[in-house]
Length: 389
Image 1 (spheres, rainbow, N blue to C red):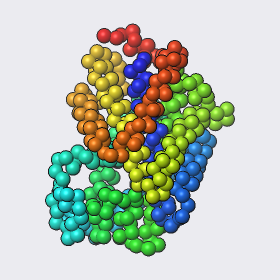
Image 2 (tube, rainbow, N blue to C red):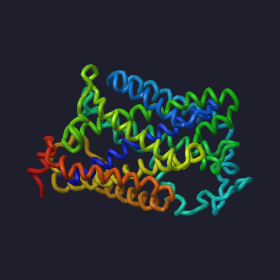
Image 3 (cartoon, rainbow, N blue to C red):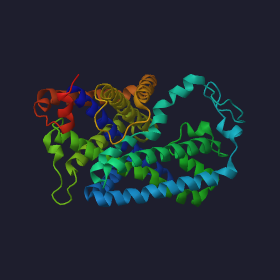
Image 4 (spheres, helix red, strand yellow):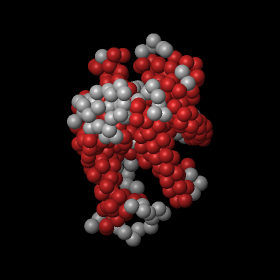
């Protein structure tokens, strides 16, 4: 029971903080594109408000919005990639960082100026490109045939993410006038690429359309956040009030509202404690570190669970079998541990980790005193208890 609770709690940190990070970047993009003088927290509240309403109004509407903005975001990414091709100078712009981290104005630097250490140090930010892809099974109840549809969806989603991530990460730094050094501290990297290619009003319009990618992620993960909190509550790990659904729309509105309030509340605290607008890049880094911290811990728990199931229950029915098996799970653990090790070396990590530890502490006290006495085991959990090795 404790292992299940801690695993679910790590996922909860990921699913609450990931929308917070995306909300931060949406607000940064909008503020930059529109030249707004409004405090970022105004954009935060507006972003959460609009997409909470859409998610609460029903799954069908939520999925329609997700489909439209996802297709739009893919189209704008492909448009960017094709538009960037005539404007690339890889040697001059993508290779403009020196081994000490300073800028090389004339380019011509090495592929990996900071060596293996520099590559590994980027892991907490690299995994961000793929964070929360594992949320897809939370929508299995909405599938016509989840045993067939869900594996296809996961494989296609991963393939899409890998392709778009490689294209953008390789092309954008090489765009003339952008460069790896500038992107290293940018709050809106894709917008910088559009500005360098199109400039002026064209970049503004395209930048607004490019927001669809962030919006698609934010909208989908808000849905996942609500489902994840709802599931933990229904199983008894979290207070039962969090599993109440809306009388009309049948959506887990309480779970969505509480999870969003928690994420937004942490953003507001960081805004106040770290220094407001001047500290906005720091706020984004702290939020991202919190999300990645929770994700890496949850991935370790999942990989360990996978290994235990493969070794002790190899004969149970599986609609889908991982082609990578136990070696793939071990690689997942190694990557997660290395990512955590490099996160700890980031000065911004401790600013976020402290809040995560407080989060864990409060939840653990609740579970120890109340939750573990009210667990409602699923058929899978009952099976595991009956067949424990």
